[in-house]
Image (tube, rainbow, N blue to C red; front, side, top):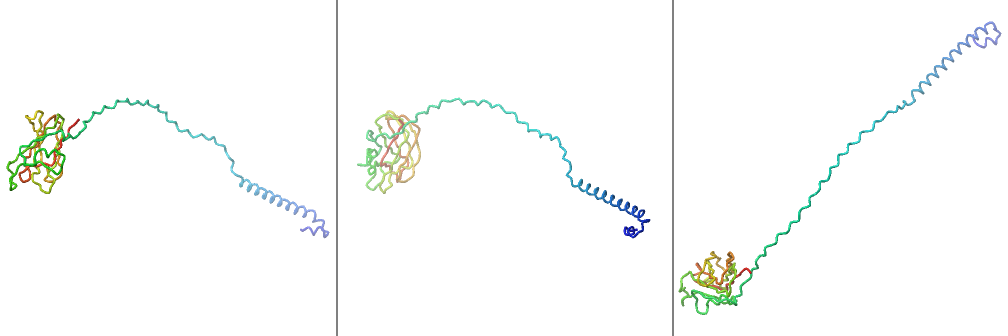
Amino acid sequence: MILSDCWLGRRDLCGKDLNTDYFEKMSRRSLLTVFTGATIFFLLVARLPAPITEESLTPAPKPSAKPKQKALPQSTPKSEAAPSPKLAGVTFTIPQSQMTASATSQHGSHNAAEAIDGNRGTMWHTDFTFFAQPTAPLPQSITLNLGGTYNINALHYLPRQDWYGHGTILSYRIYASRDGSNFTQIATGTWANDHTEKTAAFASTKASYIRLEAVVAHLGFASAAEINVTAIR
């Protein structure tokens, strides 16, 4: 039964069939509408964001502060008095001009005084023969009167400065005296066989006289261009 039948004059069928079809169609439409609406509702619900639940946030515990250490009182170092320096003695050279000299042996003008005249070109030399042979065997010595009493601490010996090496003292002994008669040995040693100045240092000794003794010397002679003595003031 279709709607056109009603209009074609089939009124007997039109009411019954028309109502039946109408209600069927309306039911279908209602169901479709309900289904579509439900579908849209569920789709919308599915798209909604999840509800935000407020959580009670527990604040993180603050790091416990380390207990402050009390600053220990710093002990102020006691000021110590600086030790008073010991006055070091001043070393000086005893002037040759106030000295006198004597020797156990000397040759002509090469006397003992030429070892303390401040002239490197002159010298004291022990005696020798015409053929340049020593007349006095070693040891031989030269003694200086210092012209005063000093705390002597070194003797400086300069060998002859010409091209000869005769008489350069190689082994020595040194003596000191206060009266010029009684001598005490204060040093001994050896020196190189060359023209450089030699030094014999020793403990400070109070003396007015000093003696240099040649134990071994070049070619058996003894000689000296200059002799100086230092002391502590």
